[in-house]
Image 1 (cartoon, rainbow, N blue to C red):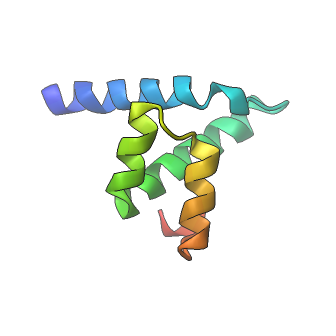
Image 2 (cartoon, one colour):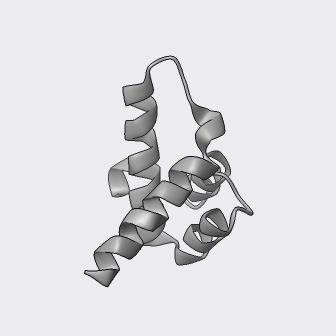
Image 3 (cartoon, rainbow, N blue to C red):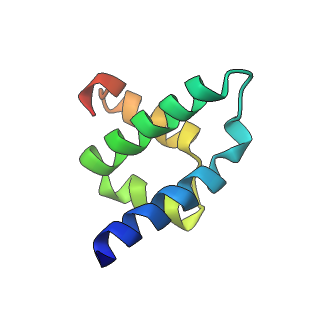
Length: 75
């Protein structure tokens, strides 16, 4: 239960951090956030920590993951 609560808090923090990435189509932006978040947690714990700490936005994390050869389909 505590782990689930922690996951929810992580997600809320990430959404707050990347709020500058709101687009015209909110659903598409939400789907993008969720995919980047999943990929980052699965493939790059260090980027995950950077985003949680507020030192990096999701857009920058996505760019780094793409440079490493990952795509959103890898999530």
